[in-house]
Length: 159
Image 1: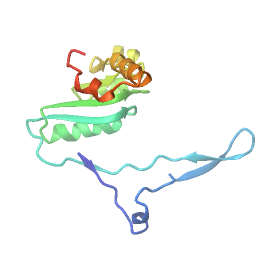
Image 2: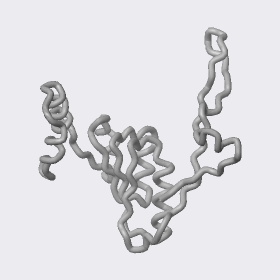
Image 3: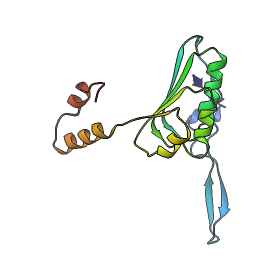
């Protein structure tokens, strides 16, 4: 899947729309404070033929799931057989478990870097990969000045 923002000539200068648009609001102290506005996300399109295939969407954080649900519907409409979402950090706030449960998403796989046991009780599609042992070993190796590459070359599926 691919999203590309429409760019004007002035956007080409830095290509990042930075800093985000902001408005001001008066806080309880009477000071004008900036309200950060989220950047508008570009429309998502499917690249290639996904008919009869398994789609895997990978991201760093899954919090607000509306975009993932929309992407899953888009993939399903184009014939994807199964749809998996994988993310390092599963924040899964607000209505995320219900939206996932009611969506075309077959499974959401996240690590246990953020507690999400309540969300798992609300949605059996949410699965967790325990990364505590590998993080502990990485910290130990860094502390002792040992090789990190050895850790990742010698990890097995059972670990």
